Length: 374
Ligand code: GDP
Ligand code: ZN
Image 1 (cartoon, protein in one colour):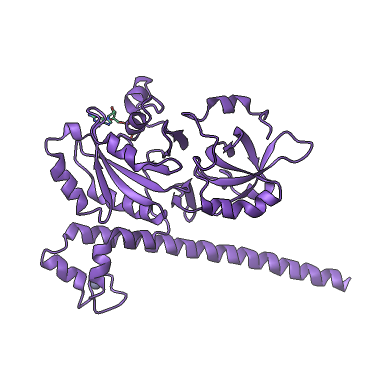
Image 2 (cartoon, protein in one colour):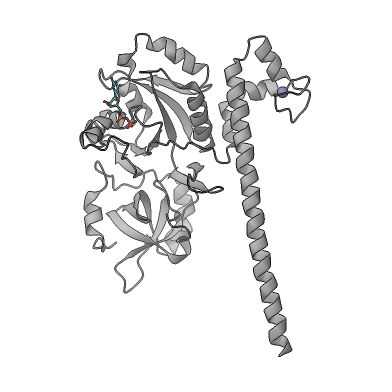
């Protein structure tokens, strides 16, 4: 494995913490080993993408980090199709000193959102995550339950296990009461109360992360993700808002997704503050995040009840009796509607692409006949 790539300066900049050289500690599970077997037989080397800069992945291998280039067949989109956390197969073509990513292994989980710049494209933010920490601040305004519901839909949809982390407990007179409010919304999800100031709850989180496991942080800007990351790392690895404001920019500048390595094992992935938190193909995530409504819906008269105006709706009946908070149903209906629109736009895109393909085919048939006629 050559380490002399043309991107020396990038190699020096990353990654944060001491990356393990042991593949198991990097999260190379039995599943990935089995998937990789045929690739190993062909002489490829396994590695995990720890960050992506301008489409170029930094890949961690048994020999250490290496800057690689995606093979031409993988270079479909401007961003590169690779995400932080991906397991890849590396090749070193003879006569070149550049390591090439030849293949991306099928993901065990993927955190995806709708690309903010595109109408019908999904964007993978982090791959092969075991746990998603959905982070919300208890202060100054208390947790945002509607946002949390949306975040949990995305977290469930990823295929990873969500956990809620409530920060800034020190600024809050009754954190336990707020925790109960959150528990009513985050059904079947562990909830952790933390404070970066007193250190409360941080050990509990530590226990949650085992060597070889990958945890992604997810939440709005300012909720305390960077601070939490630093507490877990026991070090200043990620600039917090205070530092950022000091340099006069006053806005969130954590754009790069990056891996951090806990001293006692475990991998953390920071995601940028996501303002445009649009859903993307999350029907299953929606069902997992709203098991209460899914269960009630079994009692609706119509199988495709939207719980808005149909007669014999068991969900609306539960709202009437106070069993189900109205706000909860409103969230569900809003998110369902949003998913329907995403699906519609995808259909439009698929139709447009088919039309284009048809046109090309038509042209080729014409050319074929013309050439034969000559
Ligand atoms: P991020 O945008 O999610 O990464 O948020 P930051 O980690 O940059 O934190 C935003 C602000 O909240 C900073 O001023 C932190 O010092 C502050 N903060 C974060 N966690 C806590 C906490 O547990 N208690 C208190 N009092 N402040 C916190
Ligand atoms: Zn209904």
